[in-house]
View (cartoon, rainbow, N blue to C red):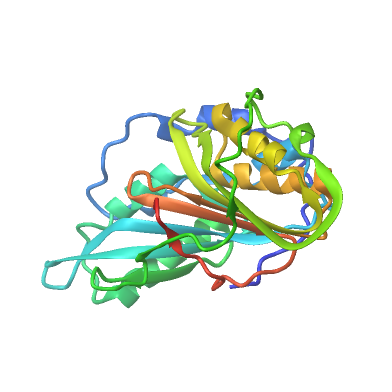
Length: 293
């Protein structure tokens, strides 16, 4: 899988915006569970739909990937015996599309009654389907229930901001909330467990652990926590929230280096982890399953 990418060009002004895409998304409606394998149920969301609204253009360098974990993966062996496992899917930040999470859940459910010779055959099918949807190579890993690969880890990185006594008045993310000082720090790392945003399709809350690591002028921590808490009413996909945070910190605080990690809690048997960085990062960068996941 390519290292994970670079510079983005803004979508044309006349392009369909995110609000219009949401109005045509069929997954806000009730959809029956598929009874047979159906890759056509996968629903793509163009990345530019959010990036054009964020004005992420060629002046803003950004690398990274999206790491999805699926805990309700099951299929049949050649004798019809059920097999259960957990899956990891890695999407390159340069992929043309992301996949709508409910459509991925339904797609994985469509595999429940299909027979495969082994997990390698299943991996190939899922990789081909997700690569076709995202228009980029997707890396797949399958783990049996006896594996400890996805065991929960305590958070080890970053100073927790959550005990700061701050007043939260902003009801939407505002770049101007962020402040920097003249003090220069190297490899500074902070985190919060208070982040909440909302699904743009259903309005359901999405919870995340957020880690921010940077080098440059020190970012005021009370203002940073205020900014992150201001997403509480915001409606946006996980990837859009991470890229909005990355953009706002880069433009407002101008760090020399920046890494943003958002580890979202599981919903519908799927959890999404979004990583954005000012320098290329390999997909095998430490991705611990955090305590709340």
